[in-house]
Length: 296
Image (cartoon, rainbow, N blue to C red; front, side, top):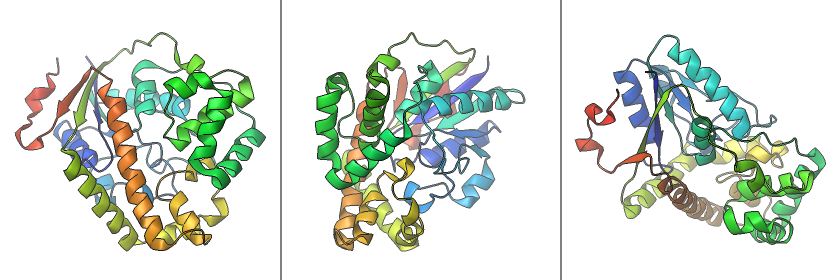
């Protein structure tokens, strides 16, 4: 039976290198499930795979869209299902890798079609978030969508902005669009989760942020200043440096904030993935074997 091996885990845990190893073993291709690496204008700040990695194994959903396009879980579901079938036309195995839990969930189980939101509503929310920060978002969610406030991710600005724009545009909570019955895919899915001790992971995150700055993240963010209000750029590594460039905070404070927010993001990712009982967790790749996949 056709099988998609889905590799998940927090940021900086080593998913890319592991996925490439798996893809090479099966002579197959990779579908990225990262909600930020798909944007061609964003590179250093989203830890896009190196050119040699992209050359070693073909990746889908890397630099595939513009920051001016609307990309969400529904977009990804359609895209990924099309690409996995393309891979299956010549190979029994496909690989997916990423840390965006909702994208992976949409691929594995399907997602409800959410009506289009009003662009003026989206822009108003982004403008107010840039002024009031996460506290403003949390207040608006609690006031306008208590259902999401209780059940949703209220420490994730992107998820909250999405929930608020859906509520204000449709009158319904985004939670109501996420309750349908799971879709049954016509291929097998094996999920592997990578994890490591928190202290080690946080150290890797901090060092990666320092490396991003050395590689020119600040210049990348400067080049994107004209687009700073776009939804795609309301994300870790960019919002903090936009604040520095506008004179709100020092560069040192901005870099420390990127590290802290990246660590918080990794924690949220693990909380999401740990709820999925179908994931087989690996905490030591040195003793992991391909036989552990148990592909039928």
